[in-house]
Image (tube, rainbow, N blue to C red; front, side, top):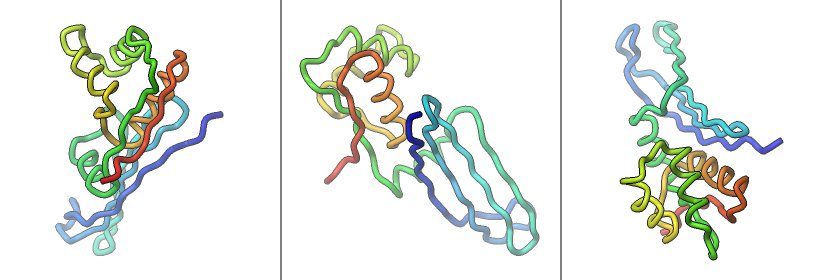
Length: 140
């Protein structure tokens, strides 16, 4: 079984029940070959509780994760089989032929980035297709 990779954040936002300031917790996790996310909060003032999950990662949560943890890059080791990389990227990212060359160039040059769970999922898919790949935090 592949290890679970989790990034989480806590932040303050308005309670949807009473308008008070409440602490929220957001998580993105890579579980096996699947990305999952959730956001939850319980207001200390009124007890209103909310949990949201599923579907695509909301832009706001993704932005908060990237702000808190920084970007991770997808790295492939030369010599890279570009046709295999393109096939995996198209399948995982839903990119058409018209956009895949720009993404491939970013991946091959080590500039393609996102959250660590997102990049590790792509690295796992590439490794399963025989391409040496890894995900690593961007260090400035």
